[in-house]
Length: 260
Image (cartoon, rainbow, N blue to C red):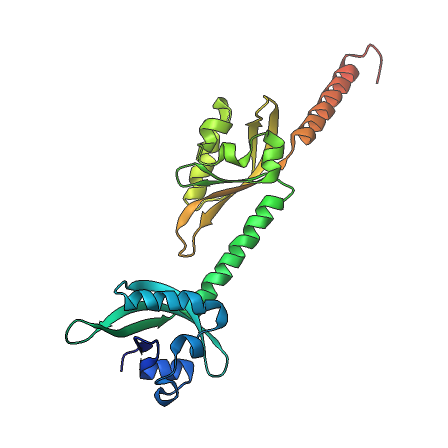
């Protein structure tokens, strides 16, 4: 009556136990499996060696917990099982087989695989984006540093990961304002279009227009901040030059010794 698939094998690997949950999960009734070799008949070729090793170890008294392997139903559907293999002993403590208690983790595995796929896609997007992107954890330590950030500032990902972003990569005179933006994002208050001054490894100054976004985990807990930037150094230089020219023209008109 256990609400978990349970099977047993004898010392030859032949099925000796097969409970109702194993039957309902896999579609084989007890009469179809008793006396059949578990590994040869119900485990796919690619996993036979690993499953056989777990069962053989249990027959030697070495039990295994949380071993993950797939089983295929009678209809050909894959089920992912988390197995605890326990040595089965007789009245004189002699080994008479193995009892396997499983947990159907098929749905959990599907969700996990999907989450891993999303995480991989996000990592590739961050890395290949044509904009500097960095991430920090709740302590302000760098966790993300994409190719464009490395290209712009001259620091590799290995040189920045685990270092304090504000203390190591922000000019002293602006550390307080940058720390404030990151702290607000960690509190859930995101900032758009913040002008972030950065100093490259080689001493060159850059201005990045930054969007600071709160980063959360699957449970919604804040785990850091992701900053997506846009290098506006050249734009600022052009705008400054345009303003200088406009100011010069204004002064020229104002001071000209002729009616204008």
